[in-house]
Structures are given as structure tokens and as C-alpha cells.
Image (cartoon, rainbow, N blue to C red; front, side, top):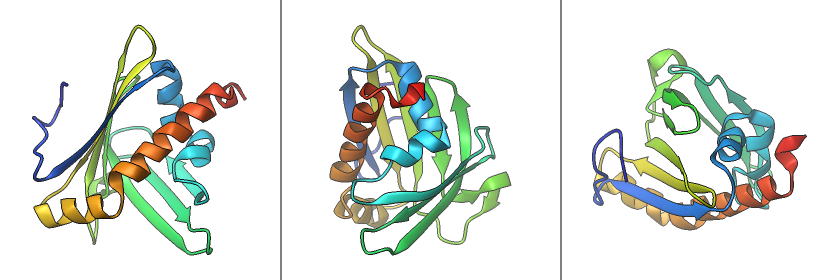
Length: 163
């Protein structure tokens, strides 16, 4: 695996790797188009009530998640790197325009590579310390991020990106 920020550190980073049987171009579109991201980005029955994407370094990546009980959780950050169909790196450590965030949690890297049958998908959550990494893992990183990848593939296969 090529990692633009260096080799993942198991003490600080969480990694999810999958082989997806859908094309890179559709995975990219699902990740970078607000109306599509809203459909699959949180494990059901959770929902995304708002999504804003300004797909450029320094641009906003913002979602608001709603629990089944109606509680909302806003998440805002900014893109650090955008390489179409290959790589997205964003963080909640910085807000749009690279403004420091009050409560940083992690930086994320999404790495995509075409394969003969679809896409090599790697998601990495990069943390500043072992405690934050453990908290993210205990929150259900692998189950949650794994579930949303499955939901994304189902959404793509349903032909929803053609709409």
C-alpha cells in the first residue's frame, strides 16, 4: 500500500482495506458528491441531514449525522489533498481555509486504486496519540467504516449514481 503521509503506525492509525467490485470512478463520485454521500455515509438507521463539500485543498468537508433518536452530530473539517480517482485527505484538525479547529480528532486518507475487477479501497484514520486512536477504535471504527463501505457499494450497484 502506498501511503502519502508515510507508513501507517498501528499505535496511532486505524486502517480499513477492501477490494470492491465497483469502478474507481463511481467510488470517487459517491465520496465527492453531497447528494450521494448523504445516502450511505453513516450506518443505517443513522442519517446525514446535511452535507457540504468544496472539493479542493482548504475546502470544506462537512456532514451532520442524526441518530435514530434525533440527536445531531455536526462534523466539519477541510480537505488537505484532492487527487481525482486516487486520493482524498481531509482533517477535522483544521476548518475550511486551514483555520485551526477547537477540538481536533483525526485526519483521514482515502486511497483508491483500480483493479481488474473494481477498486482497491483503503481508508486510514490518523490520530495524534494512542488514546484518541483507541477511543476511535472503541467507538466502532472497523464496524462503522466497514458498514458504510458496504452501503456505498450497494448504493452504487443500485444505479443510484446515474440519477
